[in-house]
Image (cartoon, rainbow, N blue to C red; front, side, top):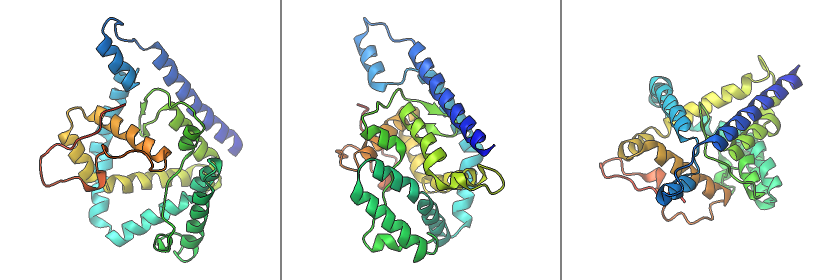
Length: 273
């Protein structure tokens, strides 16, 4: 039954991908005579933008009424050392997935760093609650199967924005499904049900990440002419940088970690390419 449940889950996600691609194929293109509109349409690669914007606003609604208040409470009530330990613990749980994708990409040096981090932080770092590995010369990095597919020259596909998941082009959505169903060891831990542990981790991670970006997202929303388009651009630029392992030209990227929250000056975002 567990195998059946995992297969059904994978089939559901695959069906979602197929549905979105079908919608993209059926979307109406601009009048060919309007070259500017056609160029903007192709550069955005967002053929189902009305549907994406609907889901974007739906996510914003649930963020306003649920996620942001919980994240604000979490940030205010849980002390920084405890929140940092939770972050380290969650990152350590993701290490096997990162390691698998390091290996699939042939990044053996990075795979060695990931394996070393996992060993050090799981033992000396008390099951990952602390991060001595960074101080010992093993910095953290992130990899997922969506990035692996990109290194195998798999096209990204049209831009999609899904409920809960957020930006999820077909390549990244397929990568997420593979990571969760096959590479993540927590998928095979059945405490209270086949997906209790992964879902719990997903929820806690979402709250923690949101709490660490409260001011950042408020600033981006406040200074954006089109919040949806800004998020789309930031997502693509960030993913391109992750796929290239930080070797892309980031000169035009906004410094997300150091936005000036004391002024009302708009923050610039590099135009979509």
